[in-house]
Image 1 (cartoon, rainbow, N blue to C red):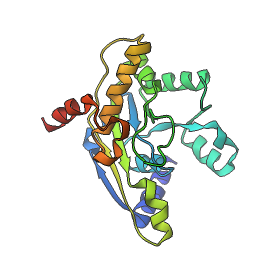
Image 2: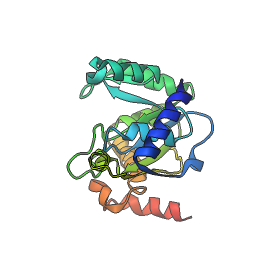
Image 3: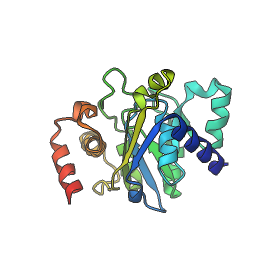
Image 4: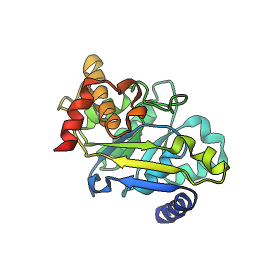
Length: 220
C-alpha cells in the first residue's frame, strides 16, 4: 500500500508542480531517524513522503480525526494522532517507541504552520526531547514554495516546490536534558533547518550565531 500511495503522490506532484529535491543521499538506509522540518503548507507532508526514500511516520492533529477520508489515509500510513497545545502522553510514548524500534519519525519543531511571513517561528522543545531521550540521529529537512502552491495551481500554473535534505547529526549525549539545556538543543535543531532554507525563510533564526557554524559544516 505504501508503494501505491507513493506512486500516486509522486505522479500528482510531477503533473501539478515542478518538484526540486536535493540531498536524498544524506538519508541513512536503515536505523532510527528523527526527521525535523519547517512547516508552511498542508503539502509539506506529502512532499516529504515522496522525497525521503524511507517510510516516515508523522504527528497529525487530533482535530482532523473527524475527517473520514483523511482519517483512513492517515491511519493506513501509521501516523500518530496528537492533541495540540497540551502534553499528550500516549502520543509521546508512541513516538518514543517508534524511534526505539528503529523507525523514522517526522516532526515540525515549530509545532504549527508558519503563516503570514512563511518564515521560521520559534521552535518548541518536543523534537529536542525526543532526540535527547532516544539518542537517535536527527535529519534536518527544509521545504519551501509549498506555501503558494495552491494559489498558483488555481491559476493553472505549475509552482516550483523545493525539498532539501541536510546531513544527519546527533545532539551531545545527555539523556535527561531539561530546561535551558533542552532550549539549547532546540536552537541547534532549528539552525540546522534554517541553514537549508533561502534567507527570506529563516525568520527568527536569520541572524542566529549558530547559522554560521552550520554553514561552515556544509562547506566542508
